[in-house]
Length: 348
Image 1 (cartoon, rainbow, N blue to C red):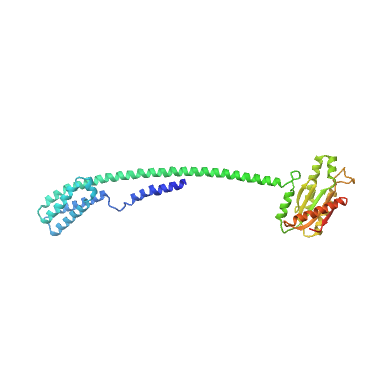
Image 2 (cartoon, rainbow, N blue to C red):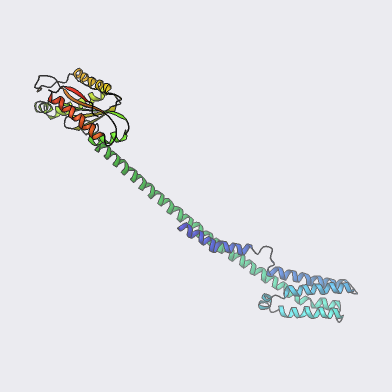
């Protein structure tokens, strides 16, 4: 808005003044009119003093010079501002007529032209003074306008710089807020104990892989409550972290892991057939046995064992709830059958 004001100011006041001044180039000014008029009078005066006697052509030339001088002097501005103008015009007009009739000598005629020449000289000097004053006024006015435009531009630049700084600060604040929001969302989608995803993250991951053939593996630690009661909750938390690490090592980087709550975990990974899903479950139980995790309170005097339910399904929003239900049912059938095993559901 401030820039527009400066542009309007320059277009409305500065530019018209400059145009008005320089548009006079090539036009006759008051001083130039007087100079030319004086030149014609002096030319007539030289002819009057030069040729004796006068030829008809010379008389005609003298009268033309007098008429041209008269026309250039007969200006309203001269009449209004210089008292010598009217008498000089009368002298020139009368002298032209007397020269035509031959009632005046050349010396007298030349002498009578001295007063109009003197009048024109004074007009020239006065017009030069006025022109100088006009040039000075124009220069001063232009200087003031330029100062206004310069200072206004500096103010606009400073305001623009201030607004840019404020914008950058606001942008950085927005970026920090966005980063904090994303970080909060990421934390909200992760289990704080193990660092893997939670139940909400599991559903979002399925939606992100829509149309892909996936395997869902649900894992539950057998007799985890007894483990906690005998070993204490810190050891129980350590067992949960250890199991998360084991799942990652056994299933590989292609698997995404989740803690669904308590001692229940889930793994989501690409899977093209049920046979491959069975291999995943075998690897998981073998890896657990290899880890040889102790469970002092296990009713069957075993180490840590798992109950696993698995299902393969095509990732769709409407298919996931059914697949989860089938994997959960398979897991509880394993639990009902005595735990420490896995079952692959074929209803995904």
